[in-house]
Amino acid sequence: MSIPANDPKLQETLRAVPAVAFDGPAFRAIPGGDVVGNLTFEHLWAGTSAGRCNPAGVARLHLSAEKKTAEAEFRYYAQKGGIDPDIAECYSFAANVKLARVLDLTDRKTRRRVNIALKQILAEWEPDPLKAPPPPTLLQCIGYWASRGHGDFSAILCPSARRTSGRNLVIFKGRLAASDSVVAMSKNPTKGFP
Image (cartoon, rainbow, N blue to C red; front, side, top):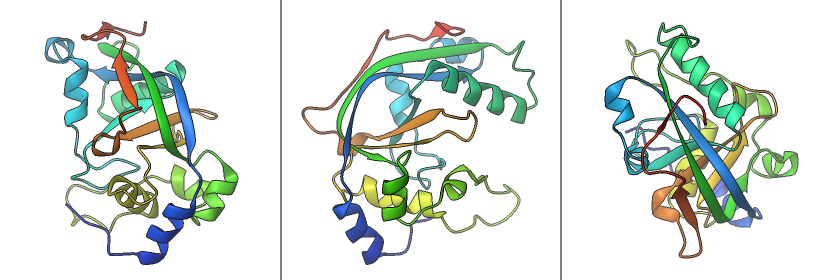
């Protein structure tokens, strides 16, 4: 895991940024065959690989705030993996999400406060697997410190790089409060998009 360097200024900024609530459905689509079809929603919480909003090692759940955004994310990663998304098997989950404290990076004022530009959020970040991993991006650093309790956020809401006007939600399992909830609409995935 590439842990971001200690950054007291960013940590203090996160503590000063106002949070917003998120209350509504969220979605995830996954390519794959029978193995994926046998996963349960609980398996999605096991992810600790690096993502746009987190360095490797951070327990998080990636969801999309809109079904069309989840579909766009699926299509992008299927194509990136060399699979035609029009014929690839797809399994999807839907959940009802209620979070009291979300860092809203879709909001321009919030982005200004944490000193991150929209183009930095949307920039490609995935490292070359044949090279040494680069240092974490600013967005990954924000996610790391948020996941460690700076700002007391349970999630980050950010613009999707795969769909204009789309939003993704990255929920930090260890930061969920008693009043927060992430409840799957079904234990097992739906084949295709519900």
